[in-house]
Image 1 (spheres, rainbow, N blue to C red):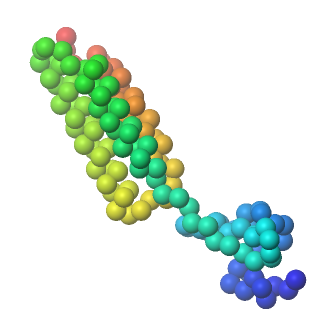
Image 2: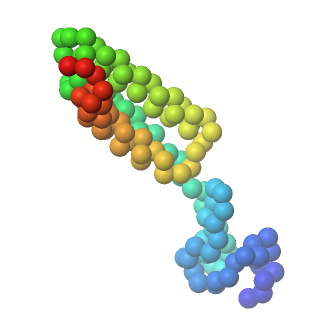
Length: 128
């Protein structure tokens, strides 16, 4: 097999089938298992379904754990809503620029843990 078949892919070093042979910004290149051709597979985008589900679960946890009938409870809920607004703005930005990394996992974890993070921060910083 000559290098002419791989024109445009000069950095290909292996001829093994089904192995990743090259990667760059949005694509991974694989050897096709049925022939000796090269295929490009685009990386997947963020998992927006799981991310929006995490935001909803986070808001639900915040509304169960944070409120109390005092000024501190109101302050915690305002902080929680601002926190959710920042995460939502980041999700919209990821949609607009079509991000293709694994950063959505960190935002899911933040959404799930947001009520506990805000409760801990209020115990540390807000007067009782």
